[in-house]
Image (cartoon, rainbow, N blue to C red; front, side, top):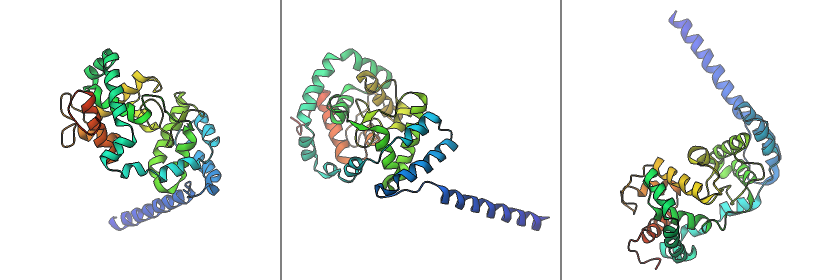
Amino acid sequence: MIKGREIATAAFTAVAVLACLCARADAAQCGSTAAGFEAWKGQFAEEARAKGIGASGAAALMQTNYAPATIAADRGQRSFGLSLEQFLAKRGAATIVARGRGLKQSQAALFASIQQRYGVPPGPLLAIWGMETGFGSQRGNQNMLSAVATLAYDCRRSEYFTEQLYAALKLIDRGALSASTRGSMHGEIGQTQFLPKNILAYGTGNLDVAANALSSTANFLKAHGWSAGAGYQPGEANFAAIEAWNAASVYQRAIALMGRQIDGGEGSAAH
C-alpha cells in the first residue's frame, strides 16, 4: 500500500514538473532589444486572457509600441547617485519648499482633512508633489501602457513590471485608465506619479486631480506604517513609509528634509 502510494506520488510529481517546464517554455520571453517585442506582446496577451484580463485590456496591450525613450531613462537615472546637497540643488528644492509653504496655507482645509483621515502632515505630501511633478506641471507625455509594457518585456526588471502591466490592464478593463493615458517614462501617472499596481491598491479617484492624488499618497504612506504624530526624519518611526515610496536613499532624505522645512522645522540644505 505504501509502495503504491509512493509510485503514485512520484508520477504526480513528474507530471507537475513537466507541466511547469511546459508553462515556462510557453511563457512570454523577455528581451533586451525591440526585435522580439511584437512576438512577446502576442504571447503575453494570451497569458493575460488566461488570467482573467478582458478584451479591452488585451486589445490595448496589442496597440502598444516599444518605447526606446523609456529604456534610455531606465538606464540613466544618474541623479540618484548625487550627494544630498547636489540632489536638492538639481531638483530645485528651495523652490519646492517655498511653493509648498504657500500651498500649505492656501489649501489648509484640504491638508487638514487629509491629516485627520490618514495622520500624514502637509510637509511630506507637498515635498513629494513638488518633487514628482513640480506640483502638477510636469506629469509626463509618454504613453503609459507602452512604457509599462516595454519594461515588462525588458529583461532588466521584467518581473517587477510584469506585475505593473497586469495592474494596468485591469485598470483599463475597469475603465479607470485607457490605452491613450499619458504618464512619465516608467508609466507613472497623476499629480504624484503612481504606478498601476499602487493605483489599484491605494488610489482614490482620478489622480490627475490634486486632492485625489494627495489623498492617495497619504493612503499609501499610512498603509506602509505611517503613525500620526510620529517623526519622519531618518531614524524616526515614519521614515520607513517614505522609504517605501521610493527606493533611492537620496530621494528619501530629500523628501524628509523638505517636508520638515515646509512644516516649519529647521533645516539648512534647502534655504
